[in-house]
Image 1 (cartoon, helix red, strand yellow):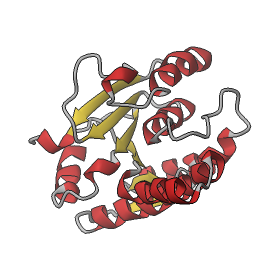
Image 2 (spheres, one colour):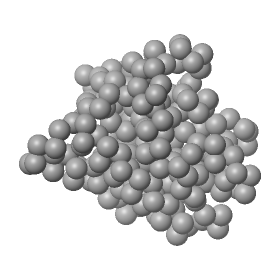
Image 3 (spheres, helix red, strand yellow):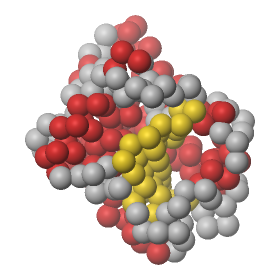
Length: 202
């Protein structure tokens, strides 16, 4: 095990998979780091907000913040799924700085991204308030500002070599720009990868 910070975004498309908890617990044991931070995806919870916006015309600004609150629910959902299989239970945190305390207790921090998104409002190049920006870009921003060395996206789709290109539809159109622009601005050497998690076999 090493001390590299690894941010793992668990795609919302995996939330309805009965094997998620068992597979995620098995896979985490293969990650060569004792400093893993989970970030929840959107999935069906955020789809509810998207559908309500479509029907009620909430507008992208209001829908943006409601969707982020839905990610708070998803963080706790992941915690419940994993707590069934861990002796040192996962802990949902609202502040990135709390991760060290959880790691020191051999626990697994799961980020509730809402506060991070609020703080992001005051940063240059904040994430746009748009449905074209998904939790993939949010996770990338978290990884960069957390000074993580690795970002791994767990998906439910096969990953081509050029998966970061927006036209592939694997990540949102803003993701590649964050990785390219923000990495340069922060001086990060973040290693980014994606995995079709439903096909992973330990």
